Image (cartoon, rainbow, N blue to C red; front, side, top):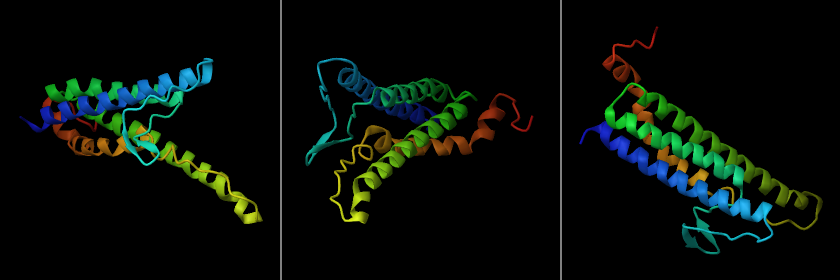
Length: 168
Protein backbone atom coordinates (compact mmCIF):
# COMPACT_ATOMS: atom_id res chain seq x y z
CA UNK A 1 0.00 0.00 0.00
CA UNK A 2 1.42 3.36 -0.98
CA UNK A 3 1.94 6.25 1.40
CA UNK A 4 -0.94 8.16 -0.18
CA UNK A 5 -3.41 5.31 0.18
CA UNK A 6 -2.40 4.85 3.81
CA UNK A 7 -2.84 8.59 4.43
CA UNK A 8 -6.21 8.42 2.66
CA UNK A 9 -7.43 5.64 4.94
CA UNK A 10 -6.04 7.50 7.95
CA UNK A 11 -7.77 10.69 6.82
CA UNK A 12 -11.11 8.88 6.60
CA UNK A 13 -10.62 7.46 10.11
CA UNK A 14 -9.71 10.85 11.62
CA UNK A 15 -12.63 12.43 9.76
CA UNK A 16 -14.99 9.81 11.17
CA UNK A 17 -13.77 10.58 14.71
CA UNK A 18 -14.26 14.32 14.19
CA UNK A 19 -17.76 13.69 12.79
CA UNK A 20 -18.67 11.36 15.67
CA UNK A 21 -17.70 13.92 18.28
CA UNK A 22 -19.29 16.69 16.22
CA UNK A 23 -22.61 14.85 16.24
CA UNK A 24 -22.30 14.17 19.99
CA UNK A 25 -21.49 17.81 20.77
CA UNK A 26 -24.30 18.98 18.53
CA UNK A 27 -26.83 16.60 20.09
CA UNK A 28 -25.74 17.29 23.68
CA UNK A 29 -25.71 21.03 23.10
CA UNK A 30 -28.98 21.21 21.22
CA UNK A 31 -30.82 19.22 23.85
CA UNK A 32 -29.19 21.10 26.73
CA UNK A 33 -29.62 24.61 25.32
CA UNK A 34 -32.87 24.60 23.39
CA UNK A 35 -35.12 21.91 24.81
CA UNK A 36 -36.64 21.37 28.24
CA UNK A 37 -35.16 17.87 28.48
CA UNK A 38 -31.83 18.94 29.95
CA UNK A 39 -28.37 17.64 29.12
CA UNK A 40 -28.34 13.96 28.04
CA UNK A 41 -24.50 13.90 28.36
CA UNK A 42 -23.90 11.25 25.72
CA UNK A 43 -20.24 10.20 25.79
CA UNK A 44 -18.09 7.66 23.96
CA UNK A 45 -14.71 8.49 25.52
CA UNK A 46 -12.87 6.62 28.24
CA UNK A 47 -14.01 7.38 31.78
CA UNK A 48 -11.03 8.76 33.70
CA UNK A 49 -11.79 9.92 37.21
CA UNK A 50 -14.99 11.91 37.08
CA UNK A 51 -14.76 12.86 33.40
CA UNK A 52 -14.52 11.34 29.96
CA UNK A 53 -11.51 11.65 27.68
CA UNK A 54 -12.19 12.98 25.05
CA UNK A 55 -15.16 14.81 26.46
CA UNK A 56 -18.19 15.58 24.29
CA UNK A 57 -19.20 19.00 25.61
CA UNK A 58 -22.69 20.44 25.34
CA UNK A 59 -21.89 23.05 22.70
CA UNK A 60 -23.78 22.84 19.41
CA UNK A 61 -21.53 25.38 17.69
CA UNK A 62 -18.39 23.40 18.49
CA UNK A 63 -20.27 20.35 17.19
CA UNK A 64 -20.90 22.09 13.87
CA UNK A 65 -17.23 23.06 13.59
CA UNK A 66 -16.11 19.51 14.38
CA UNK A 67 -18.50 18.20 11.73
CA UNK A 68 -17.03 20.59 9.16
CA UNK A 69 -13.48 19.54 10.05
CA UNK A 70 -14.49 15.87 9.83
CA UNK A 71 -16.12 16.38 6.43
CA UNK A 72 -12.96 18.07 5.12
CA UNK A 73 -10.87 15.11 6.32
CA UNK A 74 -13.26 12.59 4.75
CA UNK A 75 -13.53 14.55 1.51
CA UNK A 76 -9.74 14.78 1.30
CA UNK A 77 -9.32 11.04 1.82
CA UNK A 78 -10.69 10.35 -1.67
CA UNK A 79 -8.15 12.70 -3.23
CA UNK A 80 -5.36 11.16 -1.17
CA UNK A 81 -6.37 7.66 -2.23
CA UNK A 82 -6.25 8.71 -5.89
CA UNK A 83 -3.11 10.78 -5.34
CA UNK A 84 -4.66 13.78 -7.04
CA UNK A 85 -3.08 17.24 -6.81
CA UNK A 86 -6.03 18.52 -4.76
CA UNK A 87 -4.93 16.25 -1.90
CA UNK A 88 -2.36 18.70 -0.56
CA UNK A 89 -5.02 21.43 -0.38
CA UNK A 90 -7.33 19.26 1.68
CA UNK A 91 -4.41 18.32 3.92
CA UNK A 92 -3.45 21.96 4.45
CA UNK A 93 -7.03 23.05 5.21
CA UNK A 94 -7.48 20.09 7.57
CA UNK A 95 -4.34 21.07 9.44
CA UNK A 96 -5.38 24.72 9.67
CA UNK A 97 -8.93 23.95 10.82
CA UNK A 98 -7.88 21.33 13.38
CA UNK A 99 -5.16 23.59 14.77
CA UNK A 100 -7.39 26.67 14.89
CA UNK A 101 -10.23 24.96 16.74
CA UNK A 102 -7.80 23.30 19.17
CA UNK A 103 -6.11 26.66 19.80
CA UNK A 104 -9.46 28.28 20.46
CA UNK A 105 -10.38 25.56 22.95
CA UNK A 106 -7.06 25.99 24.78
CA UNK A 107 -7.64 29.76 24.98
CA UNK A 108 -11.15 29.20 26.34
CA UNK A 109 -9.73 26.82 28.94
CA UNK A 110 -7.07 29.35 30.00
CA UNK A 111 -9.72 32.07 30.26
CA UNK A 112 -11.91 29.80 32.40
CA UNK A 113 -8.95 29.00 34.67
CA UNK A 114 -8.12 32.68 35.07
CA UNK A 115 -11.76 33.42 35.85
CA UNK A 116 -11.86 30.66 38.44
CA UNK A 117 -8.63 31.57 40.23
CA UNK A 118 -8.62 35.35 39.78
CA UNK A 119 -10.46 35.96 43.11
CA UNK A 120 -7.46 34.48 44.98
CA UNK A 121 -5.53 37.67 44.20
CA UNK A 122 -7.97 39.60 46.39
CA UNK A 123 -8.12 37.06 49.20
CA UNK A 124 -11.47 35.69 48.14
CA UNK A 125 -12.45 32.09 47.60
CA UNK A 126 -11.52 30.55 44.27
CA UNK A 127 -14.18 29.41 41.86
CA UNK A 128 -14.29 26.03 40.20
CA UNK A 129 -12.48 25.17 37.01
CA UNK A 130 -13.65 22.00 35.31
CA UNK A 131 -11.16 21.91 32.44
CA UNK A 132 -13.78 20.57 30.05
CA UNK A 133 -12.39 22.67 27.20
CA UNK A 134 -8.92 21.18 27.52
CA UNK A 135 -10.28 17.60 27.54
CA UNK A 136 -12.73 17.96 24.68
CA UNK A 137 -12.47 16.23 21.33
CA UNK A 138 -11.27 19.29 19.39
CA UNK A 139 -8.18 19.60 21.57
CA UNK A 140 -7.38 15.91 21.90
CA UNK A 141 -8.00 14.95 18.25
CA UNK A 142 -5.92 17.80 16.79
CA UNK A 143 -2.56 15.97 17.08
CA UNK A 144 -4.01 13.32 14.78
CA UNK A 145 -3.79 15.87 11.95
CA UNK A 146 0.00 16.22 12.23
CA UNK A 147 0.86 13.39 9.78
CA UNK A 148 -0.66 15.55 7.04
CA UNK A 149 2.33 17.87 7.35
CA UNK A 150 4.17 15.28 5.25
CA UNK A 151 1.72 15.80 2.45
CA UNK A 152 1.85 19.57 2.61
CA UNK A 153 5.64 19.35 2.28
CA UNK A 154 5.25 17.21 -0.85
CA UNK A 155 3.08 19.82 -2.56
CA UNK A 156 5.45 20.27 -5.50
CA UNK A 157 5.56 16.56 -6.22
CA UNK A 158 1.77 16.28 -6.26
CA UNK A 159 1.33 19.34 -8.45
CA UNK A 160 4.01 18.19 -10.92
CA UNK A 161 2.07 14.99 -11.37
CA UNK A 162 -0.57 16.98 -13.25
CA UNK A 163 1.87 19.37 -14.92
CA UNK A 164 0.88 22.26 -12.66
CA UNK A 165 3.55 24.54 -11.29
CA UNK A 166 3.03 26.14 -7.89
CA UNK A 167 4.91 29.27 -8.97
CA UNK A 168 2.31 30.14 -11.62
